[in-house]
Image (cartoon, rainbow, N blue to C red; front, side, top):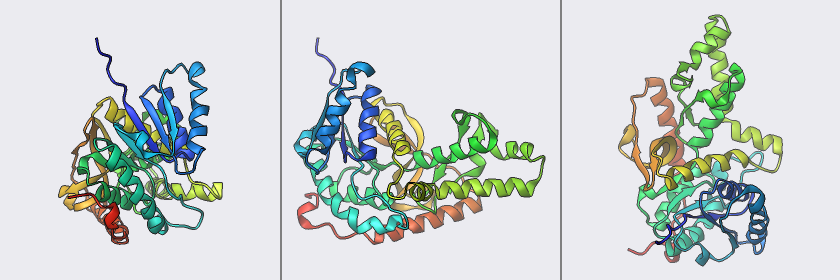
Length: 331
């Protein structure tokens, strides 16, 4: 009897996010891992280190470090974490030119060696980079997606839990739009096991509506600025633990065909009044990638914020360079 093939997950970039992701993916027994980095020795060293945890963490999976794209051949999922990260004082838009150059070669490697993979883009500016990745690979839009909404929603939930003194596991929160300062936390959807957060804030502040609204406004703003807050505190680094956990959520949804309803950066073809752009929206994620985009009717205030967020994405996409002929997908 033939054994089923284990899933194969390629991680492009073995920095902080890539290394943590590789470790947790193996400890959760999600599949064999290929950790790629163009800095010779970096991915190989981390793969040896993670492999040495196999006995104590009880996983029998293979993790390979490489600087050769051939080793990602036939991967089921490719995660792109490689690229320059923001430093204090930089906007995500400042990274367009730098990370576009990186994306050309990465996308070519994926196209050549993992043509059937689902691709999760993580590098910034996320909304522009996932667009460029799809253009360079020529893959169907549903197989190329961005990880942002899971992370932004998790941050919103975390700040709500801290404010209310409840377990974050019981908080549901949704953040849409761009992965930047114009992201759109949907306040009316935020709840603690079904009880609206606004109602719980009213209980906490004894019906003082001004304080309730000021508190929620502060939670929304902190969510929008969370990435920058972390960079300011770390000085020369950006977040890596929470992005890695958010990527794992998406990997599990695809490998295990979970049909998770989560927020991902997906290509819109008229949903929410937007066509031709990747935007953070509620999606059903399963074995084939983004299987369905879930729409809902926005309030006028939410729609205004969402449209502003889409404008921000359009401006970033407009800054993308032309794809050099040698990196363009063949017709």
